[in-house]
Length: 298
Ligand SMILES: NC(=O)c1ccc[n+]([C@@H]2O[C@H](COP(=O)([O-])OP(=O)(O)OC[C@H]3O[C@@H](n4cnc5c(N)ncnc54)[C@H](OP(=O)(O)O)[C@@H]3O)[C@@H](O)[C@H]2O)c1
View (cartoon, rainbow, N blue to C red):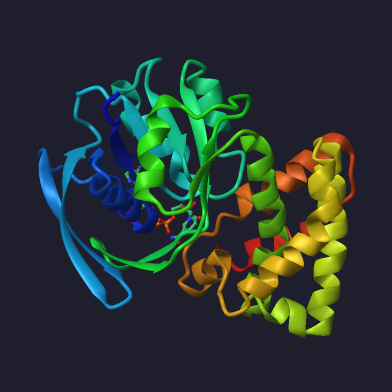
């Protein structure tokens, strides 16, 4: 079977990185741009370590009419619904739509408005940032997990992904993988954003370490209620391990706050709070952090 052709919606740091890696692996890619450009290629400058590569990536306008068979959505969580709306006229029930934004719950408008849409999900710890609009730095290698709740075996289009990304796996239980990432993000990101600290501070500062433990207890209760007892049991240990291995990192939420950009808190802690409310679980510490991050004006 030939490789799928991916249209990439959200040509930012991760979108351009994945577009470049897919193209280098032999897959067809097209960046979908908001600006009123006719079909053309854009030049991408991709940096990794000391290396710089210039790539030509085909691009087209979201408003074009040609059908899209495989759509990779790499916008921030709060932009997913509007971005997919803008290309919905190009999708059909056979289209495969892969959502890569961080957090959970941003797919709900799509589930409601397009019940026919075949949605897949991804989570990645690859690290990339934009130096300029089409100038991306691949800052760190990570793991990418793709899957679809209820679909144990890889989708036919998956074959090109492990060629494109060094550590890319199909997740037999994607819902659990998304919950695992959400739980860790809830324990780390809001605290680092509010205290303006690197991840490692959450271990070295005793007051923050105690807050992490208390947060984990609340988050674990919600995981259990959502049916993820295994995640709940190992959460504290997993969070500590992530804090240690990313000690020198600034969380994406801290970076968003520092750059006066909106955060994805609604789809991280906000999602946890919504599930907690449905199950009648008290989450006062997570609520306080949610309000605190909102009060930062993002
Ligand atoms: N960067 C990383 O290292 C990393 C790692 C793991 C996970 N993630 C997750 O991946 C997602 C994307 O992150 P990112 O860092 O790549 O963000 P980003 O650099 O801000 O890229 C998002 C892109 O989406 C575009 N966009 C937004 N709405 C659109 C629309 N309606 N139509 C077309 N394009 C639209 C934005 O365009 P404008 O700039 O013009 O608004 C921007 O180019 C986030 O959920 C993030 O948490 C990122």
